[in-house]
Every structure is written in structure tokens, then in C-alpha cells.
Image (cartoon, rainbow, N blue to C red; front, side, top):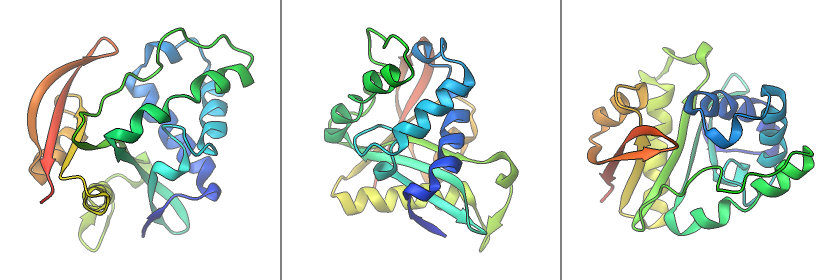
Length: 192
């Protein structure tokens, strides 16, 4: 079942985001231990204007547990979502990074899909003949339509499962990007 994330999902969603951020290897988060990053994400999840806070999240729930999450928002909102990192680092008694933890990624005309991930145990499982990540991506496209945005954008690593999924949905590669010293493809999909 697809639904908006709630405070109750904090543990499950924070772990999903933690694993995804570990895969992304963001430089400014490397100095944190896994426990510290987990704590930072758990606390941040409760913040309304945090990039990985519950208001930006949609979850796929299976048997009462959030097994997948998608984070997305209109490009105009993105600058307001990164103001929480400094206070979260301070709560951990860590010196906040001098630069942005996550560089802005959304293009001005986009509804940006920042993160889409499914828990490892749930990958390869379906509901009504659709994979859980397919449900999440379909829902992200629907959320973009509801927001009035005509284009959905996302960045993926070449050859990743999200890149393959986006290609199946008809996303088109528009440019190569270098984000946090790694190569990404910027994909776009017109939702009209």
C-alpha cells in the first residue's frame, strides 16, 4: 500500500535512507560513524524542512512495515530543505560541514525525485504483478502531476537498478553530472 510517510515510519525509513546514503558515499557524511549517521537521519526525519524528513516521503507499506521509500519535491522547495544539516550536526556535537552536505540537484522546472529505494529483503517481490519500486516510481509521477509540475527529474548512476527502472518508464537522459565526485545521469520524464 502506498501512502504518505508518518512519524511512526521513522525507524524503517531512516534505515532505508541510511543504506542509500552509504551507497552514494557523500563526502561530507564520511566522517560520521554509521551509528551517528543513523541518529542524524532519525532526528532529521522528524523535521518538516529536512531533505529526508517525513513530509517529503512516500512509503510502500507491506504487512504493516515501510519496505520502500521515495523522496521527492518541486525544485522551488529544494533550497529550504538543506537548512537543517547544521543543527543536526550540532546535536551530535560534531562540527557542521562548511559546504552543503547535498548539493542542489533539481532543475528549475522539475519535480525532483531525490531518492527511491526498497529494502533488500523486499526486492524481487511484487504486488498485483508490479515490483515495489515500480509502485513507488508510478506514485512519484502521480505526485508530480498533483503538484502541477510537468517534468520529473532524477539523478542515477549509470547501470543502477534505478537507471534501468527509469528507462522502462520512459525517462530520457538529458546530461551527465558530476555530483560529489561521482558521475550521474540526469534523467527527465514529461508527465503531461
